[in-house]
Amino acid sequence: MTKPSIETYYENNQWKSRRQSSERAFSVGGTKAEQQATGRAAAQKDRVEHLIKKQDGTIGERNSYGNDPNPPRG
Image (cartoon, rainbow, N blue to C red; front, side, top):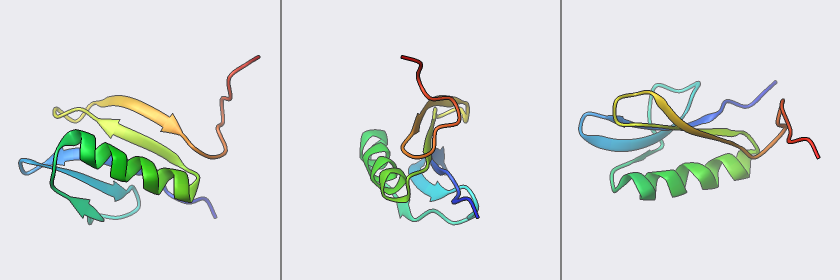
């Protein structure tokens, strides 16, 4: 079974991080940079993709820390 990606997003005037399979955030509050660091650490630990959304909800950045389906060519 594949582990869910980690998502850092803005909701109800707060930055949050959660696993995409969950409705509930595992970390809430602080600045966007603080939540990005929390989300990055969780994604690296789980070896999954980290999606960082902008305040408007669009994806601003994605980073893969596991099995990248499109690895860089050399």
